Amino acid sequence: ARPFQILLGMEMDYVPSRIATARAEIARYPWDYLIGSVHNIGLEKLQEPALYQEWDIDDVCEIYFHRVGDMLRDRFCDVVGHIDLPKKMGSRPRRGLRHYIEPLIPELLAAGVAVEINTSGKDNPAGEFMPGWDTVALLAEAGVPLTLGSDAHAPQQVARHFGEAITELRRIGVRELSWFDRRVRK
View 1 (cartoon, rainbow, N blue to C red):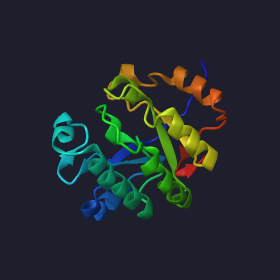
View 2: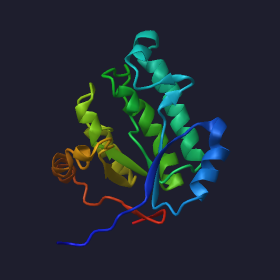
View 3: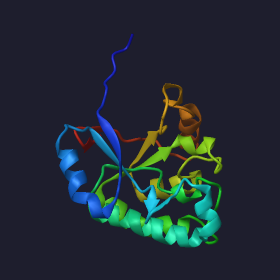
C-alpha cells in the first residue's frame, strides 16, 4: 500500500458580519487549507429552488459575485469553493457566467487563492461541474491556480467524477493542480 497524507481542511461560509468570529475559529487549529464559499445572499440560501422563483437569476448573480469579490478582498480563504454556485439549481444568467467571473480574475490572482473545480455539480440540476469547462479554461489561461474537490457529504461521494475531471483537464491543456500544506499552496 502506498502511504498517503491526510490534510486538515474546512469549508467555511463567508459572512461579512461574522468575519471576526470566523478568523478566531480559524486561528484555533493548524489548517492545511480553508475553502471559502458563499452559500447565502442576505437570508436567502442559494441551494433553495424557491429563491429562483422569487428572484431573477441576474439579480442573484449580481449579489453573489459581489460577495465573492468581498471574500477575495478580505483574504478569507485559500480556495474559492464552487465559484459559480448560482447555477446549481439549473438557472443561468442571460449574459452568462463569464460576465461575472472574468472581472474577478485580477482579484483571484492578487489574493493568491485557488479556484475549486467542484465535481458535485454534475449530480445537481445544473448537471455540470462548478465551474463549467469554459470557465475552467478561462481561469487556467489567466494563470489562476486550480484545485479539485468533490464536495463530499458522504463517504461514497469522495473523489466522485474525478476521472472525468482529470480527462477533461488534460484535454483543455491544464497540467497542474494545486494542493495545500499548512495553508501554503503547492
